[in-house]
Image (cartoon, rainbow, N blue to C red):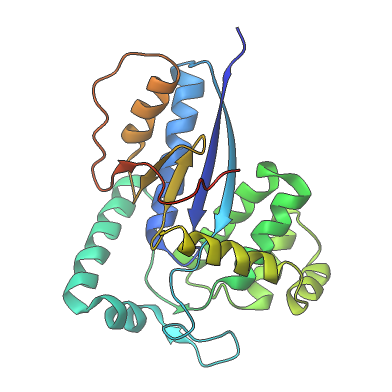
Length: 246
């Protein structure tokens, strides 16, 4: 019997710590279901761009940079950000992933353009290593994802293109309209936050879910009887408005 194909469409923003958490937990669940549980599933995954902050809250690339702590304190309030930071730090310590709130935060359009370029060139096989590297340089090493030199280094590292080719790409406007349109369409469908994982174009798991939540969902999709799915931090709900996946 052929494996069931599960199509995963993930909306994320590379400046978002919760998105890094969600990617780690989703990969952990997929690997566990495939390698350990031997579920008859095949996963197809694509990441779509989303900008958490509009230009009134986050400067454009050419404007002075904003320190992460200063920015998040302003957006969320000092107490709320402190609680969020504690949650992220606890997860990072448990998983051995050294996330940091050091460095600056920038608009993520350039990084999303490279993500789309990677997917066009090599599908998930190229897009996923790119996103993993971007989360590492921004959320572990504290580098600026609006910096062309940083982004071109990542592009060369994962094999999207050479550093020189990446600089030329980033200095152009290639794929900028596509990224802007995708971000606008997501908001038009009522999506206001990420991460959001859409499963087979029908259901969406929101928030920084644990791998256990995804494992239970994948078991159900494979026809394995499980207890009711009970997400810890988000909700399993139908996507708002028109289908996200055509």
